[in-house]
Length: 397
Image (tube, rainbow, N blue to C red):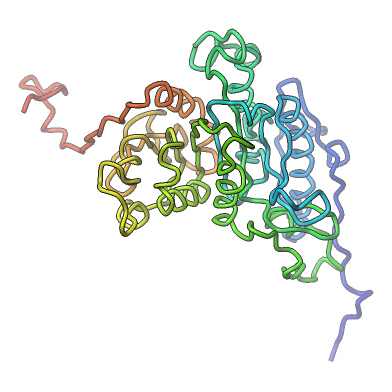
């Protein structure tokens, strides 16, 4: 029998987490491009062995995180470790909060996708468009510094609204970026990471299995994305008069599983949170109206969570239609659904739809009695909308 010794196994590939050493640079349009060919984006597949591709991508993603986080900090966000009692050396999950969290009258809380790192919407968009577009930088800038956002994007504020400083567009608003992705603690580096980052960690050889997840990698109260959602609500927002104002209103933005976790948590605890939640926006919603919005022994219908979702919640879905076009999905989600402007990748919905979300959330916050009009969208046969002359038009019924 032929047996390989340890010394015969192929060494694990090593890629430094430095853009230039990976062969890339940032051009004048804030895009990551190849040094050898500035027209080329990041190349994932560089080897037939998937391990080489995996490790290189991990190094590139680490480079991107090293660019994005300082930009978010420069905008006024600070890192907060959860649990609050954990300290910097014990297992913890980092989240980002704006410095005005304790004084803001309105807080925009974002639960991202579990497959993404903190502050990143989609690495795909970082590569194809630019760093700020694929991360939360433009989003945070539009809320905390709309004048600067308008200047750098060549517009007069969000959707053409003139910005005159941080209070001109969204008022006294704070931002909280939760972290549903980095929930595995790596003891060696002393940091939390996503599953993808964990798979890219160094191994004894290129053919060795990945590190085994044990109890040492668990973060108390944050062992999965549902626990993380609950801990964010109960660890930060339940501390009324301490970490947040006692009268602060919360706008929730949930992406995929992050939104699903928020919906399930609020459905089960709605009497506690009803007076504090202003409105909810979801991307790629995963909940079902008949199973996730109905809780036994809940209040009468007008005050129920299902009623709130139908009137002060909206969802954005994959669709070839233009951004904001009504879609036929209300029956499943229990709220109005709209086209996100993204047709193919769910992770890219936020990069396209967040300006639309912020405008609507502001509208809902300004009017506590605001209710979403219950849209009735139906498909009709082309013959039903043709006039006598054969032209397509509206038909009175």
